[in-house]
Length: 198
Image (cartoon, rainbow, N blue to C red; front, top):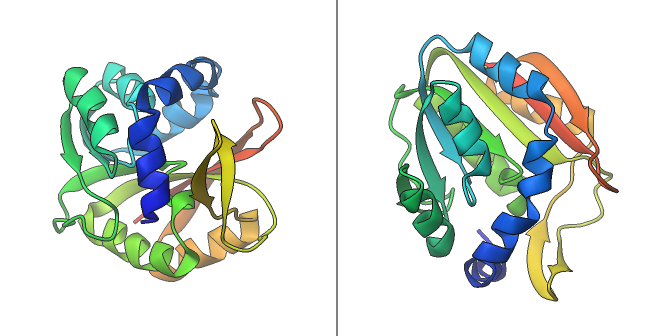
């Protein structure tokens, strides 16, 4: 994972947490509900958990959440919220075989390249139990080149945007079955949520 991105989240973890309060207060409930209703059990991996705002929502739905994030400062926040939290980037995380009923990866995998994403998707597939549920949330947009954007207090973060069909094709090739999709536009950017079954 891009080190500049990790450093930015380490530096501005508290500011980021405050920034996303409104985002999660207005987040479409149908996405959470669809994810939960598809689950066969409650053991869920929150991959790229950030400050844990979505993990809190999932926990309130009765799910057992394990958080993974590359930012040590974000991990401190989720630890303080009572979550089991692991500090690791996606490429170096050890994905146990068929351990989780669900994997929740909301706006986290947009911080890695497409080639890295393909590798991580295979690991997500491996760590899910049969009929396991995978949710991915991305910023929707035309591929503009894998660039760093100075959009958090002048600091750089790496982003890779995807169009709907590009995302569906890539995830389908891993072996996932597409189940559900929803868009959310809180401000200028459109967030694309997709749910898949192993």
